[in-house]
Length: 84
Image (tube, one colour):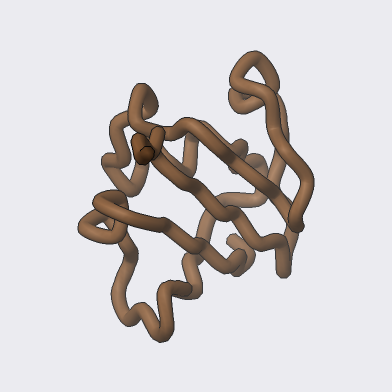
């Protein structure tokens, strides 16, 4: 196991691991964790994960099952946001 930081925004904050501080929370995940495996463990609906970044770099939807997460990484996720 190793620890990453999870940041979930807008209505996705309801899936934030506890304890969360200022929109971020530490999360212990397996050494072979991927973006989608962590999101599934947190029960975040994958269809609501529009913008996904690891350490500030965009992760394309097709890469989320294979993009591994290393100790100290930051996973940030935003849902689709409408505005005008």
